[in-house]
Amino acid sequence: MTGRKVLVVDDEDNLRSMLVAALKYEGYDVAEASDGNGALGLVRTFSPNIVVLDVMMPGIDGFAVVKRLRDRGDRTPVIFLTARDATADRIAGLNLGADDYLPKPFSLDELVARIESVSRRYSCSVSESVLSCGDLVLDDIAHRVTRDGEEIDLSPTEYNLLRYLMENTGRVLSRNQILENVWGYHDDTRVVETYIGYVRKKVDRSEPHLIHTIRGVGYTLRLP
Image 1 (cartoon, rainbow, N blue to C red):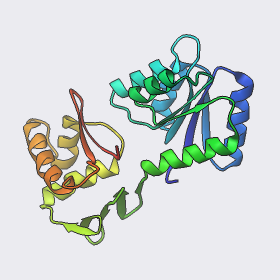
Image 2 (cartoon, helix red, strand yellow):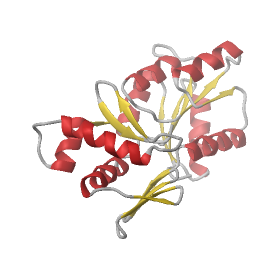
Image 3 (cartoon, rainbow, N blue to C red):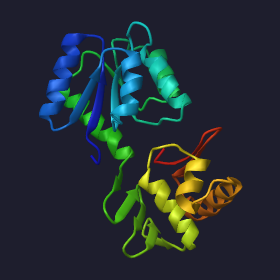
Image 4 (cartoon, one colour):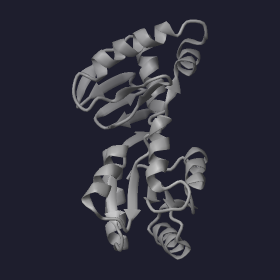
């Protein structure tokens, strides 16, 4: 697993404490919240790699938390924990954008296996010189970009744009942010849209597509 930051959200204090302690023992960096508001705040400040989220909570329930995250362009992976195991509930949760669904009671080993499985789907990494997301690799020392082992020919501006997106994998970047960090000025975001199109044609020729438009917000690079 590339990232080991897990946010555990459950209003049952005993269960939450047990999960936090067990996941820390397994080597995870763990934060915890007892309600939906706390979860939404910690997703921003703690930046977890995955959220383990109870559905049935007072106030903002787990379904509403995921809907708010997805509406604001946040694609942090989510595993639902719930006593509700009806097919309709599982389908509703997955349709909202959750990544997995684990009915209570469950074993810790199964939860860890689910966390690892979901995380592998979102395996992107950043080191000092090599950025990767799935089969897309950018080697900054060699100034070389490949996808599934095939070299991609990029202009200097296209390369800098892709590098900025990959340095911020999973984050939604506004057009102004991209313009300032790649071009160094603020006054014409149309150039961003044009170059995103250029890079997309070269990088996303095969599935899965990695560059995504978040309508009304900007762009993000991530595994689906």
